[in-house]
Image 1: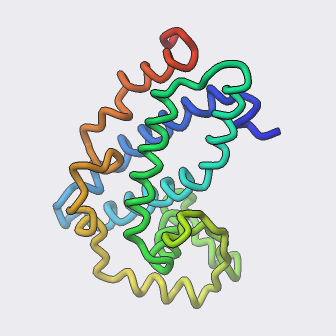
Image 2 (image 1 turned 45 degrees about the horizontal axis):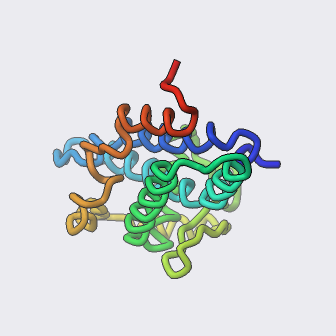
Length: 198
């Protein structure tokens, strides 16, 4: 039995809290236009995009958690609807990145988060990639040479320019995000547990 089915309400609430935490930590740097912080912005984008890949990768677990709740009561529609909307927003964002760009972003993310150069210790890197054609996440392994080539392809990489057409409407890109505000998370908690945070 997975964590999602053992504590389904906690798992669903943690989805919102996790997305909010990653947004609060990194989106201000991603949005910043000052080229002084270009390296920090690239690291922030890599962490944020990879977190969205992991978010989509857990879609089946969220579905299982909702089904588990529905065995004894109805999962609140506010929660179900908002999760569905955030998943759609994540898919829209991830569809902007090619597989090669995702490989390079995972490598940069691992360096930024773990503080080590994983390819110095392993001959390949196993990562999760979002496949736009299927809307699913696939796990794949890449050689050192492949990752070096992918990193070279990121020269002059400006991902925020790709988001300009849907920046205002995409909840995950919106700095003033009502869907993941502390007030909204409190509402999700009340909907799921019937009481506010204690």
